[in-house]
Image 1 (cartoon, helix red, strand yellow):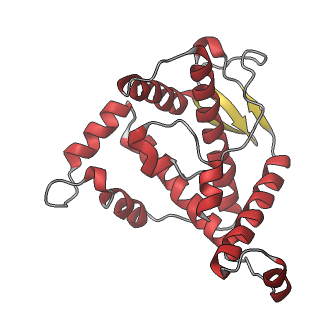
Image 2 (spheres, helix red, strand yellow):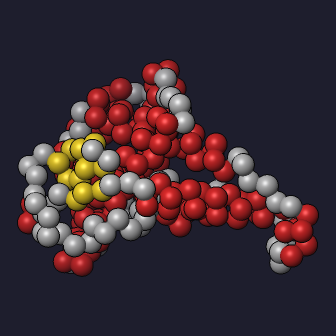
Length: 219
């Protein structure tokens, strides 16, 4: 499924967050045109009636630009708009999939979430142990509370579970093997999984109501 993830992941993302937010679907939601919709002070978009808080967008957007500046990237108007659109799209798609995980009955326990964070290399000390000071410093730099960050991470873990569940239905028939120019069966299965995931997500998006409220003047 990695081809699918690479195809859909955000192209410009805060480097430090790649391990957490880099493996998501990315698709067009018509968010490239800002200012044509009413602005909301605390909401950037509404997905099937669920509001996406401005604070999530603000944190990721500002830290992404800061990271790009540190790396020596020139912050042009085009790059700024691209960053806005991609972060907003990421938040929208995460909410779409999160809603689908609930329909499928997928849950992420507190224990799963804790292990996921505590085992992430960035938060470990020199002895390979989880260091809460490093973790909270990370959140402080991100300007995000532990509650908000862990909520976003819980959504990502649930999303991964759902994607694996859907992709597990991939099967390659003997006729498909014979007709394909690819002889490696695992590669064929991966391609089939990508197709299934793409079709599934396109259907989810098509049947969803998405309203963008972010105004570029306060992005």
